[in-house]
Length: 127
Figure 1 (tube, one colour):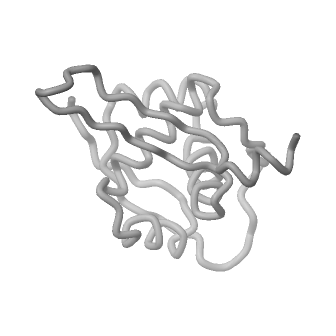
Figure 2 (tube, rainbow, N blue to C red; figure 1 turned 90 degrees about the vertical axis):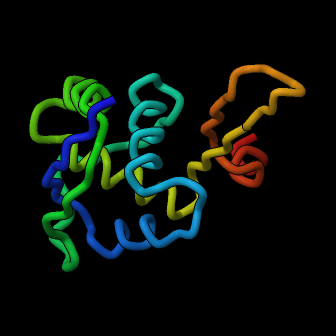
């Protein structure tokens, strides 16, 4: 896995909240999981045509896996990847998307799995 540092146009405060979230994963790992799940159709968010002109947006340097970024760019369209990432970060911070990792031990070997989906209260409200 090769991670390349990329200049993305994101809401800087939201990215800092993601990076300082105190989770087990780094911000790069979270973004890679979100982008992969989005590309595979597990996350259904509406990506706006353009970013809002509100304050707080700017260049953020993020190291992302080359394959994940290339797939996201191919799906989003060139120049829209930052907008997709910004939308995914916003949904994650709002709790509309959650990430749950399951680890295994040698005593119970099985592959680790990733689940991405809305929290239970969002699912119940939609039903």
